[in-house]
Length: 368
Image: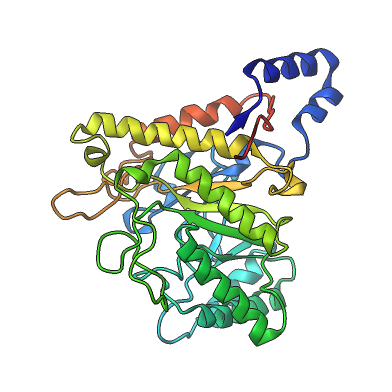
């Protein structure tokens, strides 16, 4: 990653302070958000507690999702709630009445259509069927609320195998309806997992005729290099299809693997690996710009928003392999205010730097 010299941003900050608000505004550049805190989010595992059971104000995040849609979601501390609709399954029979009520009650909301439709065990759909269901959701939601913003499709990771699945869905929509898929916001997950039909990881996409894709290791699950490359690869995919001007949201990412594995048997070292990955990913997403790939309305930043996984999922059990790493609050304590974890403390310490006056100079690095 090419970076400006470290003294460059200091000079820009000094100049902004000396020359006043106009200079500061020029230094900040174009931004979709008045505060960088609006970019930070997290996912709530509803099976272990509602967001209101945790003192999430400590995290200062601007938005959250819980992989569901709601007519009247909680919005602690003014947080935005992003709606999600599952579209998988052999049959497709949404509760149109409940969905209509949620659309009507939340004008202008963001709607994520599908959750990892490229992945067995999640929405698990053939590309053409996803294109049909996305179209049906688009027509219904936009018909009731033209200001709604639709996002698709939340693939598990933008590897070549997953991008092939997405290309097939993109092409199927054009073949079926004569138009490109009408996406307002692109969202992807970056869960760095092995692609093997018969082993651990995220398998291969439905309809794929291969048994393996990227064979990432357990240690790769916390690789910043792979994380950054996935973002550049997906932004390149967007540009190639005339979608560069759209926002890109990393709607789910984190470190799922046990700390003991990441640390080579030393869980404390593995915990530090997770925290280093969190801070490094925040640094990159806040600062990475590219004049050829980034979103023009957002100062050519590559990523507009992101959601850490998770607020409160169960810590992984090495005997049963149930649960995931990286939770910001302890899933066992669901009595308000809850118990913040070391990962939550790292998240809170990072966002604390933006809680006062906003001296935000984000355009400090460029993508590879």
